[in-house]
Image (tube, rainbow, N blue to C red; front, side):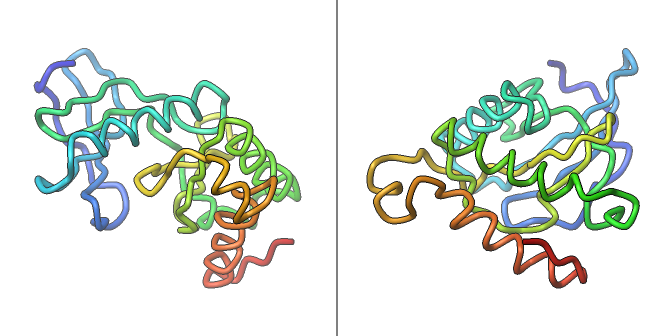
Amino acid sequence: MSDDFDIIKQLGQDGAQGVVSLVEFPNGLRCAMKQFKTTKSPARIEAEANFQTQAADAGISPEVMHVDLENKRIFMESMQCRIVDVLEKTNSRFEDDLHHIMDTLDDLCILHNDGNALNLMLNQDDKLQIIDFGLAKKIDNKVFKKWGDHPNTAVTKFMMKRELRKYNIHIQ
């Protein structure tokens, strides 16, 4: 993927790890670009991209289009909006979709490990997806022993439920 692109706009706030922007290439392709801070380890960027790729292959995260370790960025499919901005427009499938995401992550042996409610987004087809695998780690026997058979429900969903309350959203 070329370095020849225009930044259309920043998506969300500056994060602890960097900033996400909507970018456009000369051929008209638009995608989200996560630009990491210079201190971010290339190995951690690669791990984050690998976790997200696995989740995308399972249909619960945006597709990773390109990883640029030299410039410390990941290009990915852009999302439509954050769930917290449109929840009143959604129906009760949100809770079922969230539970499906957590179960799928468990099946993939990926502990997402980030309860930020802003990591729940809708793609262009209004399907709930999860982003930001910067804190993710592989689920091993130690994780299962500590958190049980459903570590993402015990950890990630638990944190998200607490975070969603800040937006006056209450889930089971």
